[in-house]
Each structure stands twice: as structure tokens, then as C-alpha cells.
Amino acid sequence: MSLDTTKTPRRRPPAAKTSTTTKKTSPAKKAVPAKKVAPARKGAAATPPVAQKRPVAAREKVLPVENSEAVVAGSSGRLRRNGPRMRSSGPEQSVERILAATFDAISRHGLLRLSLSDVCRAAGVARGTLYRYFPTKEDLLDGLGARTRERFESALRDLRASTDTPDERLEGVLRILIEQEEEAAGDRMLQIEPLFVLDFFGRLLPYYSELVAATLEPFFDQVERQFDMKIDRLLMSEVLLRVRLSLILMPPQDNLFGTRLRAAWNATVERQIKRSSGR
Image (cartoon, rainbow, N blue to C red):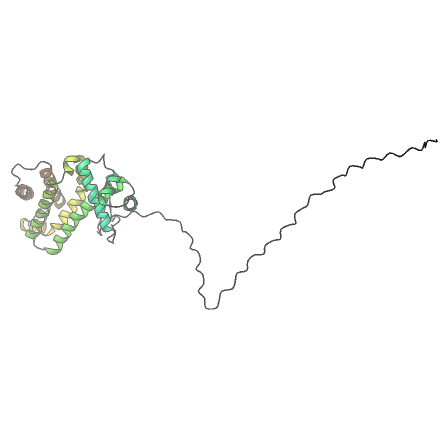
């Protein structure tokens, strides 16, 4: 038997398949067209433009005084005429409450312990309201002094408008000084802060003397005509105010403030007459 010597071809293993997968790229996003704004209908109201915020201007210092011949006396001691007036609009009540609370706080705790928070609480106003009119503690004290000065000016102004005769003017000035002394006697300000009170009156003494001299003009005119003499009106008015202040600081034991003040004034007038006549 013959053998077949023909070699059977070997089968080659199938070749490994190569991966031909490629990364798919996402298609570019289409640009979204801007929305078209529909035209406004005829007769429709136009949309109001957005208001732009304006820079807040620095607030002006407002002082609660109504007087054309105001003299501002700050805590620095300088006097300047025709100072800023206090506004008499609606916020005047807030200003008055603030000043009243300040006066009460100083009378109870003293000037060094004056707290703006306590003033706001007692006056019933927000801190921003306080800073609107009195940005600093010095401004607050200036406002307190302006209120005291305005009351004195107003009393003398009303007296000049309602009286003409020399005796009425003199009696009116003495009455105003006596009434203010009675108010000062009930306040603790003089006891708690005597230096503050003395400094205030000391700085305002020249101006107060001018006011009193102008108010007593009919009286001085009468004395000069009667005795044919010239009176130093400012000096006599200053003496009257100094005597009044000394009686406030050291009240008489008999409590006869008015009697003592009138007696001191009469003695001053008599001395002026004697000096002028050479006696």
C-alpha cells in the first residue's frame, strides 16, 4: 500500500482584527439667534428708564436757630456773626428733643460721660437722625448753646417790640434776667458742669452786653438827657450781667434774687452819675 506523501498545508490562524473605531466628534452647536424685541404697540405706555443712583452729597450741617442776627458760639470760644440758622421745618421737633435730651444727660452724668447713644435713646430718634443735624459731639454742644442763646434773644426781641418807655424797658430786662435765674436754679447743669456753664457765659458775655444795651436804649437816653452826661452803655450792661451771674453761682440766703439785682443796678447807675458830675 502506498502512502500519500503530499503535505497538507497548515492553516494559518486568523489574523487579529485591528480596531478601526474612531472617536466621533460632536457637531458644533448652532448659535442661538437673539430674540427679537417686539415693537411696542401703538398707544402703549413706554417702559420707564431705570433711574441711576446719584452720589450722595455731603449733608449740610443744620442748626436749629431762627434769628437773623445770630451769633454762633462754638465750644472753641470763637464768635461769628450771621451764623447758620436752624431750620424751622418739620424736623424742628426732632432737633428740640435731641437738645433737651442732651441737656438732661449732661445735667445727670456730666459732660465727660455724655453718650450719643443715650441721647438718641432719650430723644427717641435714630442715630442717623442725630448725625444729620449734629455730626459730632462738639456740634451737639454748639447746638445746645445756640438754643440757650436764642431763648435770650427772643425774650429781648419781644420786649423791644412790646414796650417803648424807659421804665418798661428796664423793668422788662430785669424780669427776664430774674426768670432765667429761677430756671437755672432748678437745673443741675450748674452743679454738675460749672466750668462748662461759666465758659459758655464768658464767651457770650460781650454779645449779651450788646443785646442788653440795645434793649435799654430808651432808659440810657433818658438818663443822659436828664443829667447831661454820657453813659458807658456796654459797661453798665456787662456789670448787670456779671452781677446776675454771681447771684446765680452764689444765691443770696434770703432768696431775694430780684431785690439784690435791682439794688446792684441802681447802685451802678448812681455811681455813673456821680462820676460824670465830678462828685
